[in-house]
Image (cartoon, rainbow, N blue to C red):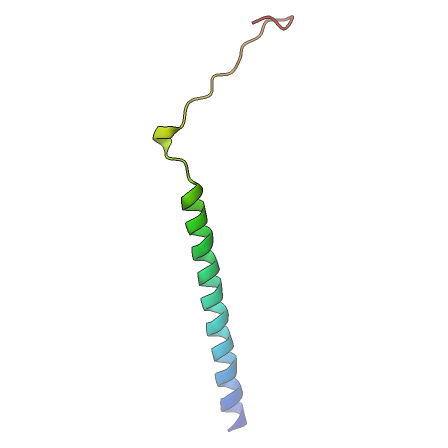
Length: 56
């Protein structure tokens, strides 16, 4: 009887840990999506070309 109870407690702990991990993963994905910049709003960086002596 004790083994079954211990097994249930371990199973419950695993499910709880899995749920916490899933929630954390979702929070990270939500944060990344909120910080994402749509490609339409970005501009292409053009490098500054300088001459041999620092001239443009």
